[in-house]
Image (tube, rainbow, N blue to C red):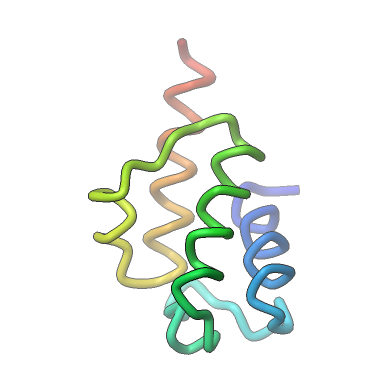
Length: 81
């Protein structure tokens, strides 16, 4: 399962949306996710990938694709270490 699929599963479970509607262009607003959903999704992804997502970085995510790209890059750096 790809990083994107894993994150999509986490977000769909927490935000209670069908993962079929989550695209790389989707925003948390599109998914009707509230701030608690977003925080829970961030924490769940941090735990799943054993990474840390600083608040200032998370605030830069414009859509699901930004979130996935950030996690992919952090996970790759962690694997290189």
